Image 1 (cartoon, rainbow, N blue to C red):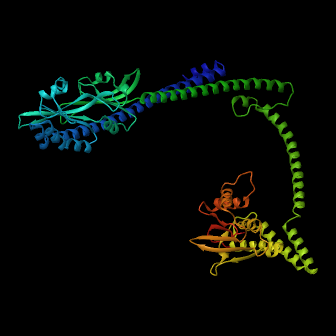
Image 2 (cartoon, rainbow, N blue to C red; image 1 turned 90 degrees about the horizontal axis):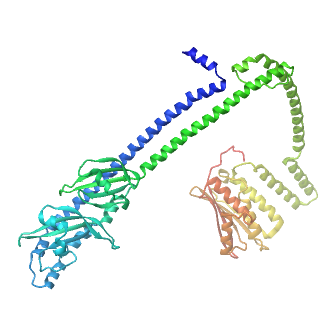
Image 3 (cartoon, helix red, strand yellow; image 1 turned 135 degrees about the horizontal axis):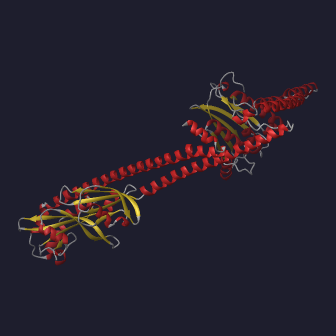
Amino acid sequence: MIGTISDFLAGIRVKHQLYLVYFLAIFIPVIVIGNYLIYSTRSMLTEHYESQARADNMRVKSILLDLTSSIYNKAESLASDQELIALLSRQYESEQEAARAMDNYDGFQTLLSQDISMQTIGVYTWNATLPEGKYIHRITDDIRRREWFQQASSSVTPFWSEELAADDFGNERLVLCFHTRIFLPDIKSYALLSVTVSSNNLRNRIENSNLNTVLWLKGGSFFYYSDRNDARPKLIDLVSDSDREYMGTIELNDQKVLGCISALSSVTTNNVFYTATLDYDAWPYKNRITAIHVGIILLIILVTSVMIVSYSGYFSKRIVSLRETMHEASQGNYNITDTFQGKDEVSEAFEDLNVMIQDILRKEASVYEAQIRTQELENQQQRMEFKMLSSQINPHFLYNTLETIRMRSLKAGNREVADAVKLLGKSMRYVLENTTTAVTTLSRELDYIETYLAIQKLRFHDKINYSMRIPFDFNSEDYQIMPLLLQPIVENAIIHGLEEVDENGRIIIHIKKKDDRLYIDIFDNGCGMTGEEMERMDYNIHFHPEDSSRSIGLYNIYQRIQLCYGSEYGLRIKSKKNCGTLVTMILPALKYERGERT
């Protein structure tokens, strides 16, 4: 058998062999497995939707059973009300007396107010002394001709029926009604009690799912439906007079609908209710899932077909290229590129030829690699020379230069210049050392701020005076802060706050700790801001416009604090015109880890 297959494959071209393998190993299995998956998926979806429809049908039946039992109990309670029986049994001397008796009886209003499932209550009496009222009606010829009246007159058993009733807009539709007798033993007569079920209350209790519901009485018409299009006689034909459950597909309006129809026997009457649960989404969803599966199968077949056709073309091209390579080698042309990588039979057939060609290529490659290594050495030497030149200028050169200027100023007797140079060097050292660090101690940050203020003091003299207030029991060395966080606020206080101050300007920095938070107050007694200026500054800090340079320093500080510590920390600004400005920075009181580089 195997030999026969081998002989058969050997007798056809390689390209056709690939097509045959693809058809047997991919095409047929994909079709078979795909169809099985589609069938299994549709079966599972059908089972799911049927279970869902059956569960919702049970839910509706439970609601209907509860509703009918409740109305039956309350109607029977009303029918046995002695006050109502006395009202209906008495013969009144005047219509006014009868009207007063009817007005004094509040049983109808009480029952309707207690149970919103009842829409109307009507009592039909033979008592000619009772006038026509809101709840009590005389039995007229028109009433006698009605089917429910004839059934109620001929039987003492309570029953349900569908009756036409007008809604709030004057449209008539069938509603569910309950009828029972009120026995009047004193006058050996009876009255008829009729209770109409509220369709809106029934709808509110039933419609809490995406499934449609249809309700009807056995031998009657539909008294409830979620969608008017659901009210089709075919639903009744599916169950006819049988009390069996129907579960399956129903054709409604040329559309397939999954439906569950079951019967509910009333425990208080001889009536049988039918409930139909309809799912309009089941078939479209199953069809959509089927289409997706079919699309996936077709895509797999298309992709694999393209791949096999492409590969067969590629393989045929290799064969042609191999033949051309052999021809070039036979002509003495050894500048041949090996296009037969791998260990298949085609590559092995020309292994000796490829060894010779690869040997020549390796020699050429070794010469080329030597050139590359030489060039890399030259580039590395140039980078080292450039690095040596650039490293000659560094912060130590700047510090040494400033120190030289300071010493010469002292030698010349100009101590003010010497102090300014010393402060400038100290300030530059702190800035350069902390450019790439994440945290420093609060003590070092305050020392830098004091250095910065000293430099400003040298510039502006009595225009700027400053002081720092730190609690006696507070050690600023123990707490950390992001470097260069306070300087923009102090600079803002000098440039804007003390702009109009000529002398006695003050900047006060107050540190305090409360509830695991650091509060750093920076106060200036400058010109202050109006309420409108405060709102504009607050907006620029939180939402800084890209085309504006105002408050950019405060905006950057606020963003650094928010990103590093969280949204509950930041800046708080208070200001009053001609009274000064107070900027409070709120930070977490984090302990500084000793040995951390700042």
